[in-house]
Image (cartoon, rainbow, N blue to C red; front, top):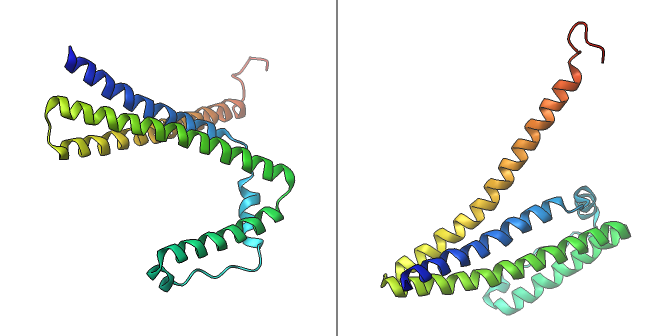
Length: 176
């Protein structure tokens, strides 16, 4: 019975990772964000900030600070180019993405713990634990990507069928 519980905890925890990942992809894909306006604003921003010199990476905290500072300046300049409704869309998108990141990160930590407990119970080597973590994380990501790809393919096929049905004339003798 202990083995069954360990396996249930393992699979349940990884489902708690895969579920929020998929839900995040669905919700963020459906989020109304004016991507074209962001791209145009980022190209229109003048001046272009020069990249941080690679030499600064000899002092990583300084390089990190300089990169963050330039990134922040660029982001503020882009946001200044956008209208209030686009900024509101962007903030909503970032908030939802951050929320789902927290949920998926918490679930991932629980899944790692449950995977460790399963590996301990089964007396597996440490490399098996790490392999399971990598494989299960990959399966969780792959599930979200595959399901979104499949959904988009079905929707595109449906749209083509509807467009074809609307463009064909009704059969002879049928009033439309």
